[in-house]
Each structure stands twice: as structure tokens, then as C-alpha cells.
Length: 419
Image (cartoon, rainbow, N blue to C red; front, side, top):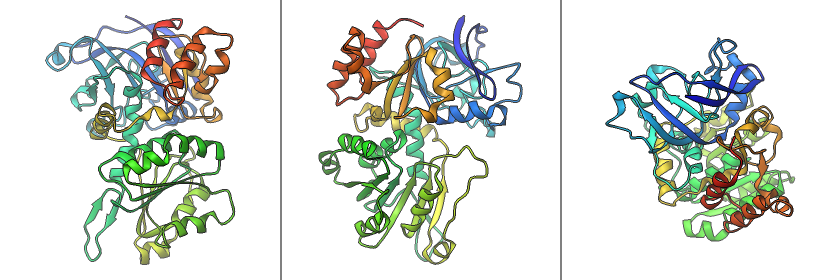
């Protein structure tokens, strides 16, 4: 079968190409990819090439398909899996297979499996590790956002606290405690706010910080006082650019400090501020992965010794985290569309991936069977003054406070030019 996909050949060398997929083996599954959201991890892989831990050394001769936050439909099932999967079923995928300790993952390591494609082949590792997940929904974009949400879920589960006088670690954030989400109004920060408000182990207070008033106001317009009240959580948004903001953060906790601090950007001053506002037995979760392999920041080891403060880092979630994300979406408990600020077609992937840090906003959602420049949802209304297609999309997203939705997705898939 022919596919069109974006493949990596080396550092900064991404190419959109048509090529033939081989026939599937008995232990493989052929899928039609419909949507993929572009992750900063894909940008890092594109920049690092084979220096990236998940990217093979021979990509110049055997390029791999990029994209790992994808969703679609099953087209053909190999004999081994015909009692488990059926043609026509929707799927989502947990790319961190962890197959026998290997780092191989779709979007990095496989020649014929990745999200920025029209069709691809799911390798046996996915099914053997339970990483190919059936997905029953009227949308595709939820399936693409399940992977980034699973990273957030995993971070909350990986945080831990100690029990005074024993060596037992209690996993998870402090229920009813104080949580700070620093640099927290980017796409993953918004997901973290949503999960913190609606998970079964909630903090009592969440303080979200950033230095951009516009981004803070957008987050506050999504997670309103009424939303926080319904969740029975105190929610505050603070611009930490102002002098004295750190003292203000501590005052908000009555001087106790924060039991859990999530660092959503790999910025040295942000990490060091997170360290300073930790409560006794506070856990700092370094969520945002840096591209610099020598990246470091100061950490107060006096407080480590006498205040039992500690740090944890997570990179991705596991399959259980993915299932939790999908279940919470299906039950309407979380709405990760807050992450999405742009949509585009497969022909926009190369430039978007290579320049991702330079493009403002949140998640860039790609529909792989259409041709469309990457377009900000906020620009739909202006574009709609001269283009009926964008006029209709603008009207559709206006119904959901400017957020991408199932109606808009269905309209785009049925009316946009096929790629």
C-alpha cells in the first residue's frame, strides 16, 4: 500500500514523501492515521537526529517516520491479532512500549510506524505490550491528545512524599495539599490544571504561574472560578514577573509552602524558584525535558537534609496512564482541547516540527489526509471574512469558547482539500 509520510534522514532533515509500505506480517496491524499532535519531543528528535536515544544510527539510509501522538482506524489485522482487533475500529497508541527494556518507539525508531503518515504499520511490540488501545469516541483528536495527557497523569502518580519516622514513600501528590504549576499556561500546563482539578486525588489549592499576562488570561478564561468551585479547589493565577511575587506565593500558603511543585518549562530560574517555595517534605517534579544535555540548576541541599525536600522527573506515561486519560475524556471529566491552538495538514508538518519553539500557542494538531497550512484557531474569524471554509470553522469553535471541537473536526475532514 502507498503511504505519504514525514521521515527523518538526519539532523534537521525531515522530508514529506510518498513510498510503498510492505505487506503486513502475521503479527502486525495496518492502520489509517487520521490525526497526530506535534510534540516538543519530535522537535528534539528532529534537531538531534541519531544523537537522540530513540533514533537509530542508520536513518540516512533507512529513515524513520516522525510523530507519536496519533489516532486513527484499523485497516487490516494480521492473523495473530484477529481475535483482539477488528478492521474499522478506532485506535490510540501509547508510544512508550518499553518492550524488553528497549527505547524504540513510534515516531522515532520505526521505518513504517509513525503518526505523521497517511497509513502505517503497527509493529508486534505494540500489541504484545498492550500499547495499541481501542478508542471509542466521536472524535479523533482526543485519541491524539491521550498520549500527552498520559505524560501528565504519570507525573502526578510519580510524585511522592515520605512518612515521618519510616522509610515508606507515599506515591502521588498530597491530597488536599498546596500545588504550584510553574510556567503553567502552555499546552501541557493547561492539561495539568485540568487533571489536577478533576482527578481522584486533588490538591486543596492550585497556584498557576507564568510571566505572560495574555497566556494567563486565556488559562483563566478556560478554568474559571466556577470550574474551580465545582471541583472544590482554590485556583489562582499569578504573574511572577512582578517584584515580590515569590513572597506572595508563600503568603498564599500561610507560610507553609507548596507540597507539590510542577516545573513546566526547562528554565533555570523557574526551577530554583520552585525549590525555594517547597514545603517540608515537598516534591519538585521536573516535568519539562531540556534539549541541552548539560542543563542544570541550583538546589538547596540544606533543605534536602533538614526539610526532606526532594525532586522527581518523569518522561512520558505508561499504558495505565494512557487508559486513565482515555477514560477521563470519555466520561467528560477532562477536556484536553484546551491544549490545541493550531490545526494543519500533513504538508505543514516539516516546517512546524523544525520551528516548533518559535510558533506561539499550544498544541499543533495535524490531520494527515488533508492539505492545509498550519493555522491558528484564533485566526479563523479573520480568515473567514474572505473564506467561507474558515467562516464556518470560526462559527463552530465560537460555540465552545474558541476551543477545537468534534463538529469542527468533522467539518474539516469532510470539506478540506485532501492531501
